[in-house]
Length: 322
Image 1 (cartoon, rainbow, N blue to C red):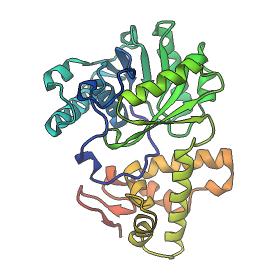
Image 2: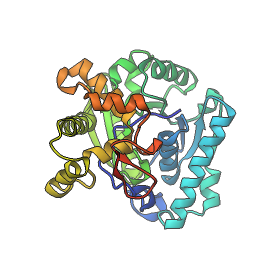
Image 3: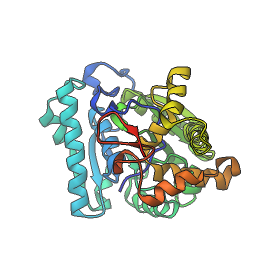
Image 4: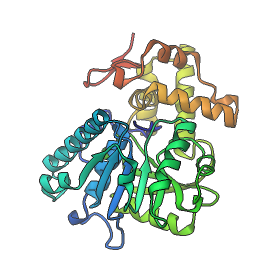
């Protein structure tokens, strides 16, 4: 299970570059900034594994809970591969064996007991997230914090399923987590000031920058990113320019590291479509998904993960899809 992220403009080869996050021993975070000693992550897909990797580098003991043994093992494999890459690149001073000892996986929610923080990272389905969050809250200590990794869903709506909404917030990680320098901290109406302060500290301890926003459709990043991406798609539909040239206009003209269509391929066209549909329902028709996006998703052209989206991918620099 993994939660989609709207993503931010990142280099398509960012997975292979040095990560901004680090462990406390490398001196990147303030003495005052600490992650909880034990952190849980619900979901070991790409996003969940990235979140687990980040907290492990930050010094936490991390438990990842998945739906079955096969998914749990797959999640563990993702995290351990990411840790090995971090050690190889010198982005952590910790020995690989020590990092691997901090990670465990389970299929039992009860193993979240003793966690100071649990981050839910299941797919962007409101009903599924509410059900998952309720189940996690039931096993947490009374003073534990709970967060959702969502790129657009209402934190207040999700908090409505919880007994302790003051101890709940959004932590919007970006894809790919190791290459991103940003985490959005999303405050619900009832999120406590203490949790806001703690969340800022966690983000800093992970070597990333917190952007704090109040709960609103799409927050800051998704609302801006999707608006630009949808307009780029409309321009492509209208024949204004090629996909390559539309992206080049933003990269060369506005210094975006990656254009909006390549970013959509990295995020996943299906993820973009889901966010656009949600924003259309909450903010109006200016976020209506273009036909080209619906057609590509229906064909299974989901971007980098499927090998084709607005560009063709084989983990080399992308070429425009025919």
